[in-house]
Length: 346
Ligand code: TLP
Image (cartoon, rainbow, N blue to C red; front, side, top):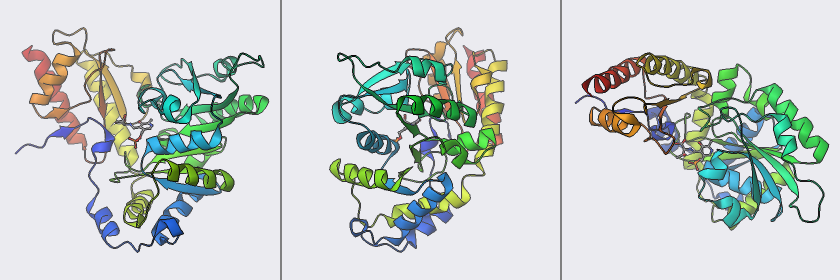
């Protein structure tokens, strides 16, 4: 049977055999009592890699963002987010329903906000206004096409935050993709943030989990918030073991996913689809087929029937393709042939 090429997301990744072995052999304890050595190993490792005092293992990127916002803000305060930020539009509305904060959206160029626009979005002193207390930066920016905030961008955001006494939280679900794409250490991208969440279950291929990093007292608060939302864990070392393995073995190889995304983007562009090639900086490619005879939904359906799975287009007509460790350069060439075939058959 020919292999299905699954580019719907890097979340579809299966754990590797070595990762499964690490999970099977993990030494575990009860994390509630803080005596699961593998969870402690993962948290210590994550804090060191990101250059922060402490870390907390959580169920998902969504939970990491949620507890970071709950622990870092008061209800009724305002949070600056990019207009298409994941935390704003793809986390089931927890900003309003659970955190009770007021999002202020700032439009970025392919998801990248400028420090000037962020500063202009801070509410003033007036008694009628919510108090702005946090800036949330998504790095890489998913809806922007996997675009990256640089170390310099972060320094400018820090200057704004310091002028106004704000915290910075980074939704770094794909922070290692950003680091690899920019050729910097992940810790350099975290240096100007107060807190950062990164996902283990995306390009790093773990079956589960994310980690929040920050100062010790802040992480202690996040631990309480995690408990409050039902995210306390027990023998979680089984899952943390996958994370430890991934941080050691799955980061450097992300460069291959980026090369494959570039190849795919250029190929789709050459086939006549609209692709913002400049925005293709990591492992995500958006392509718009609205101007083809099939249209974006038609194309996505047609290629699915031929064994190429993609994220279905939303109202903006963009089809999302995400590369990951189970996708080889040969798969990308086959994917392009499938798209070419579908377009020429229409
Ligand atoms: N992104 C997923 C989902 O939207 C389904 C994907 O396929 O890209 N921040 C960012 C930037 C994300 O892309 C995601 C997930 C999350 C947070 C949430 O992580 P999880 O799914 O672990 O809650």
